[in-house]
Length: 175
Image (cartoon, rainbow, N blue to C red; front, side, top):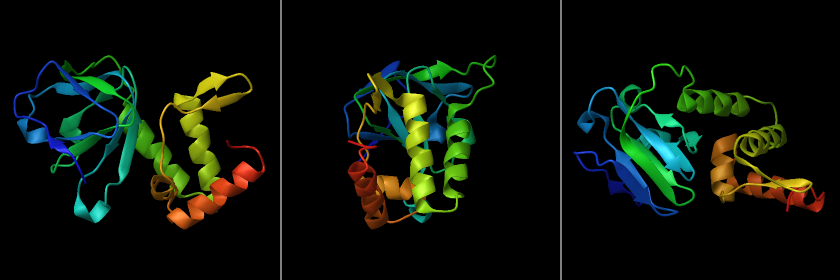
């Protein structure tokens, strides 16, 4: 894993380029603050060895990451697109929607569907509905996911995700 340790004193705005990852240490963060995505798309994942980089959420502009309630070992934020976030934003107590909890629940539900094909379709559906851009009769995601990452998200191997994606491509449901 290639990530940069996030400093002890949070700055106002942090910018990272696509592919870069920062490790957020919750013990060094001021109380009642969170990370708020200003622009771009981030993947939030657990850095623990036993979970092997398990994806917790995908965040976009306006979403907040409340670090106090996450793993004591920290959390990693990976830039799927060029990313800018406020590192010491105040938690919006009036907003009951928690993007990380919502994503984690949706990803857990996907993992419990019967077949890998159903899980892939559900994953693509949620990604397109939440982050897709309409382009005429189709939608596109503004970031790339490897077949290995897709396999992790749907609880299968890279080989299985590649086979299923090839099947969708041959059916012209995926470009």
